[in-house]
Length: 331
Image (cartoon, rainbow, N blue to C red; front, side):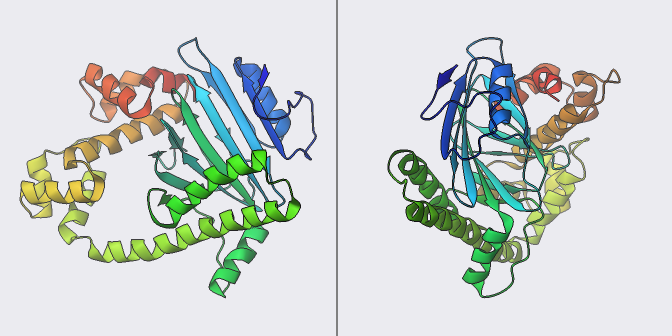
């Protein structure tokens, strides 16, 4: 096992005073044990894909009130329960070539360009070839105090999962600040006062991202055409028996061209591509939670209306970076 940018933590170490650690491993069991030695309360398991070229690495910056963790993987993935209790706020953001899939109850996934705050003990899995994922963990009371200073009011704790964009606004500033801080903390900023300033800056941007998104979401909800909401609701209620584009347009009471332009404007894809993404996410959630009762990938796929299994497998791998059977084995 090789050290990456820091001090190697022995598997049986319980030392929590180290400010930075980085570990790279080419064995899933060693990688899992090494991370759990650093964070004993975390339930993290490392997976190897394709049986070769496995590499798992993580780095951690421990600040007075928060931890900044970076996972880098090649042909590898992690399945992890947050070790955050109600005394912590946690968020994750995929960077290059990464997708983070969230627990089956959510049946969703997030890709690069998104910052996701997740619930205490919410399961997520991350990985895919050459992936790069950041996780932030703040002390809840400390973070709430900063939020109260920003708003001059009591802030309701973030108890449900939320997502914001990291491509623009405060979310983009937060991501740039994380990348800058990660580099500087590892090389230069060792003074306690400087480290406190860094973490206060990061948590401030975190809060501003979600506060600004509340205002944007409210404005966007009011500006979304009623026909588009009708189409979205109709698609959501018919994922297992996907309707035709013409039928969706009739239910929405607009022309196919108008509906298509609206979906492209809001989601960047056509209505049919949007529906396929939602259906694939539903299948993935079921694969990750399926019981050992003889249910097969084919059973789950056909139940959700995927009858051309070859094309289904191609679409699934393109979206999630692994085959349906690989997802099933990782549950």
